[in-house]
Length: 429
Image (cartoon, rainbow, N blue to C red; front, side, top):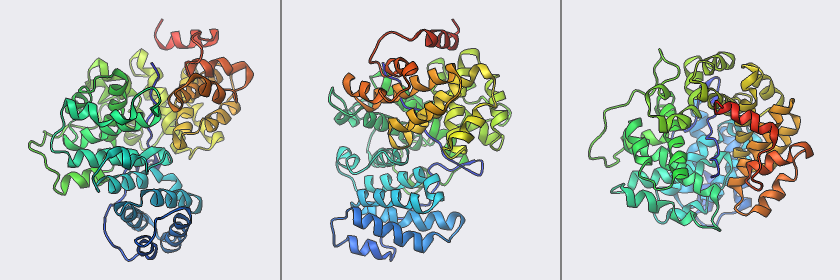
């Protein structure tokens, strides 16, 4: 069974900003939008849109800047120009570091706008791309959930069916089922337990855990950014027969909540996101977050450090040297799992295994490198379906750690001896 990619949260000034943009649709007077009504869109249009947007919005600050970028991008998606909007977003990331940092915010909005047009989810997915932590795909699923007249076992299991099968893209399947977690939180008014039960309607165990991750992500995003687009969609007329009693998303007196309050089957998925809660409560103190992970149940401490690595990727803005320094702030025994979560995020950013392999080469320490390469292998196992392709992607590993990558990618079944000891420790053996 392949492990799922670790979900992503971005941070700005110590505050979580995922899905935080203001979203509005329709004509906004943006010059290139008018032009695109008369064209098919394409790379040249994306560059022109990015340049005009940067000229218009680059000097603006705060929420006004976010709104200035988001409205035209969403408007493009709302007329079917999802590819052009995503291309423009990619170019904007080169022009404005704030867009690169908050790209997942804008990608979610583009996906929601494209998804609100209705039609086939798979067709809208085909217009998205993996950039900016695949936020476009997640937004499409949220838009589908918002419009669906009913959500039951059949609807849940059929929704991602186009992305299954031996030749299907497992990475895209993950984005679909992960997006469901966001969707359940939205339609169930952020009742975490009810949302997790929604994920349990899925028949496949891997799908369920991937969905759980979306639930826990949306849980913390909703409390930290209450005006994110899923909230706006719900508050602007989404049909809901019975709004659930609001679920307490965080508990300032218990930094391990909600993990301390959910069932055992949800614990691992919860702890994979928990440092986002911890950092929200302690205002971005990485060292203190590591100490909080040290108080988690024994088997979950390793998972908590994986979560910390994922968040460090955002806090360090993917800078390898800063990332390594931050991972060193915790208990040394758990450090390999910090790198494990960190490098998975590096790969998740743009679905490129090479980004993870490059980072692993810069990591110090045998145990850290072993877990780093194993993590990249697990990402490769989701990025590629066939063994030969997975093997070829692992070839870029350092020779001493090639088998760690191949094992993570399930190309070989024998766990390298150094990994046996590390992973047994994580299992409490």
